[in-house]
Amino acid sequence: MKPIRKAVIPAAGFGTRFLPFTKAVPKEMLPIVDTPTIEYIVREALESGIEEILIIINSEKECIKTHFSHNLILEKFLESKNKTLELETIRELPKKIHVEFAYQEEQLGLGHAVLCAESFIKGEPFALLLGDDLYVGKDIPATQQLIEAYNETGASILGTLEVPREDVSKYGICKPCTNEMGTLVRLESVVEKPKIEEAPSRLAIGGRYILTPAIFDFLKTQTKGAGGEIQLTDSILRLMSKESIYALSIQGRRYDIGSKKGFLEATIDFSLSRKDLSEVMKEILNQH
Ligand code: UTP
Image 1: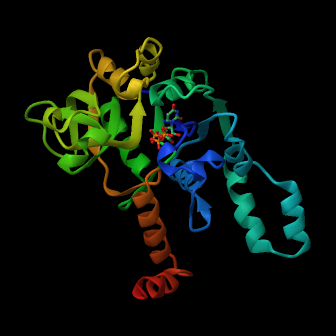
Image 2: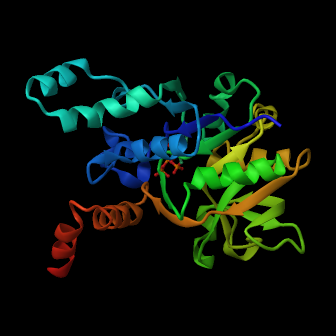
């Protein structure tokens, strides 16, 4: 069984739920206080043991690339001012990991974005972390939880969370095999954005996956599905006819940064958990 060494982060979508901000700036660059969302996601991958990362962008989202590159002029400036702490803040990540980029020029959907990673993946199983889903894992990072489940099963793993019934039509929803119970369950089926009355459960796919490379065979021939997009969930369903696929209930808190509510919640929670900001945030909240 090949180990999970690579991660793909799709970040090429238009982010229409966050307009007008996303007209010029990617939602994946939305700051949670002072750090872009996508930096947290790259750090989660690193902390989970990932060695190589590919971010899928489009040509309007070059600032994501800039964020993960060295900025020699800024480094020189900070050096000359003896701002060592700030210098370390911007130097640390590019030193730790070299992030690669691929382009999705037409926004045909998440399945199509993942297909853009095929030549980077080169036949290995890989982790997939959506660029606008932020996790604070309980005890260990969300991606590490999935990798541990993969190491146990050797199969594709879909990270899930339980959502209210009225929200099922916003997600890919899992149907566990009969009699499967617990945090790691084998799946019978998945369906993208089902109507409430047709949803097989409230187990939603929550932006974290481990996928075997066989997924590319199905993505290549995937036709458009819900919303007229090439849906990853549809290819996962077809992969299920060939290989077992499991759902793992992720232990931790998820923030959907692509939604205004998720962004606001993350800003408040992350501030409250930071030593330098918790008192300030409490003061702000108390004033309302
Ligand atoms: P979303 O469906 O949340 O992103 O995709 P979106 O389409 O950009 O946003 P809305 O719904 O219009 O507000 C989840 C992740 O997949 C990426 C997005 O950038 C996001 O990080 N994505 C989505 C792509 O890379 N390509 C696509 O064609 C679609």
